[in-house]
Length: 383
Image: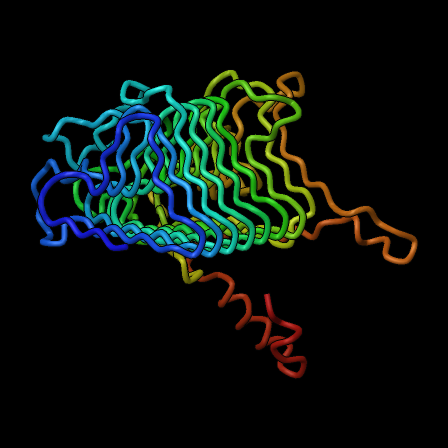
């Protein structure tokens, strides 16, 4: 089934508590704003809209495709900003608090072996008590154009990337290069953001990739923001399980924006947990192709925690948790597999850290290595 809409308005607009279901093997495509209108009201039109919460669920081997132009893919449990507020507003028109969020439960569930594809500005904009779950072996892709968010959920929300699922988030232009000033901040409208008691799980053998391109200098806009000041000791806010892949790249050239952040404040029991993942990569000032974003704007002052960046460089953190005291319970766990007598190294991690100031340093180092050890070749010098 295909729905095409050229006029203003939502693709599907239902009362709170309703359900949109794509059955096993079925397909639903929603194409919004097919005449490419630019009226300000279109920025808050959604492919699927239920103001007081609702459910979108897809079955096994199904396909859900949303091409929603300058509006939202799915808006559940959210009020609608005034028509005069457009993408140029730093917070997408939603402000920094929970004023627009409703408390009715909102959920999107992608079935086993199913596919979900989104192209447009804003992706999923949900209220409090929201969930987004991708099924085993499902394939999910977000292609955000312009200053929009991919996932913006309220309090008590959860994202679960199911076992063996592939989940790719690609943004082009979330920042000043798409017009206006900065887009998003430490307190709202990040590319992926969950409020108090929100959490993300990358389950066994799942893939979670985030790639941010063409941002410019976009201060304070963390890529993934888990806005929880009070976590639970046994419930990590971010968890990557056995065999999973986590790959986050951001070409934001402003120093003051982390890849995964819990904002400033007296936080407690905030836990990031990595349980024997296959591969974890966090790359700042780097585009989706792995190339340098160029000169970095600004630097943290001396005396401010730099992570493992040399203080003379001072270009910001990759992961950030407020309040690092032992009493707070805040920490990052790296849990490897249990070593054996045969393979004692099985319980260890190898961590590669490259914190240098300059463009494409890896390439320069490799050239130096080859010059120094030409007889040993690329296999020895590869970095």
